[in-house]
Length: 522
Image (tube, rainbow, N blue to C red; front, top):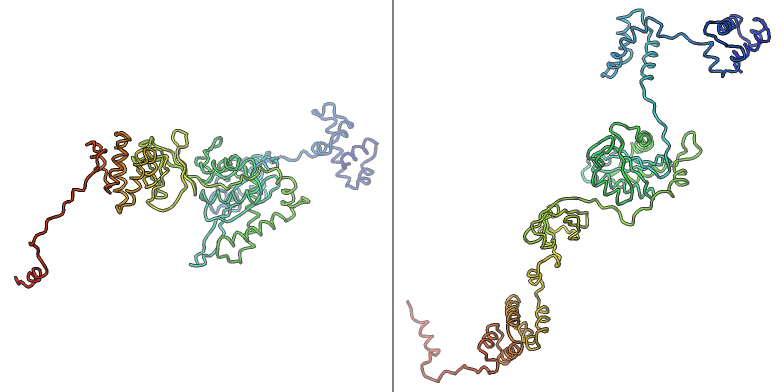
């Protein structure tokens, strides 16, 4: 029980001032002061129906306030002068080099009877404390959010070949429920490095949280907005692949992800400081060292708690994370291209051509390509799929995309013509087979075969068979020969050998003639 309540009880019992002072071990003047205030409370104009029983029924802080109302500083004339300059002091403190000592010295020059330095700082703190907005304690659910940020300071390694110091960015993430942390160094804060680090974070956690809370960096947010920010298309694809959502923190509101901001501060002494005297010659070895220090950080017992971050994560959070997909995410790139007359599109990133259906010549198609695949869409419908290759100037063509004429041209081969001729007649098949046994360039034979097939479409099959057999009997392998037989209706006649040998005569030039020709001098 407080001394004030004990004093009231002793007064109620009729004890004197000396007795009360001796029992409570306080001075007689202090007892007189309290009894004077008690009498004023019981008999004053504002006392109302205040009684000793009511005072004894109050809680100690309430009772203490009645006996110690204080001496408000705003009743002091010096406070009016201070208050009139308060906005000036706040503004000046934001300027470089301006301290409270500088402001107080200027204050005393203009007001020699003003506050001392300690009182000046006290009232300044009181005003600044009153202006501070209250902060809210958030209750986090397990496996719900992942806070993401980059440390403000870089972490270096040395290029083994050139000796150049390469400054890397430190990616930091944490689960707010368990405060379990992840960190790794990446070359930059670009989209590909950011998503690479985020995917490795998921693999380290062994699952995916429900919501990602990044900062407003360009790799995550295209256009910042308090209510509906425009998320980077690559990050949206990443979130869709892993089955999570993205909710960026508000602009210049670090309290939206305060725990990861605190993680960055903790990692400075636990990672940066521990590695400051070590040299690394590649990014892999640097990340191995960072991983060891972060693991030790997660296994360190937390202040005022009987567990470490890793224990709470494994016990209450890891099993609630969404399972990882079977395949890793591949960064997608988007572009819109026009289909050329040869029903191919040109991807400048590969310097190579990819086919689309010939019916889309002149149309624009949306192209989505990853590191290994290319997809083409027209009006929301997938029209082409190709595996990416990086040989410049090469055409990647799917046969089904070509028109019938082009497909026929590409399909030409000896077997192609043999199969077509076999469907028409046996004689034509045998004739085509003998054509390919001739010592001619394949393109010339293909032309002859095209002529024979065209002739077959216009002629009677029986007449064609007889003409082919006649040509084979005479050893003539020519489209025109077969055509003349059919047009002249000579398929029933045999072609005679019209070669007639020359008669013998004596008008022959022998060796002696050519020998004399060589001896003639011009």
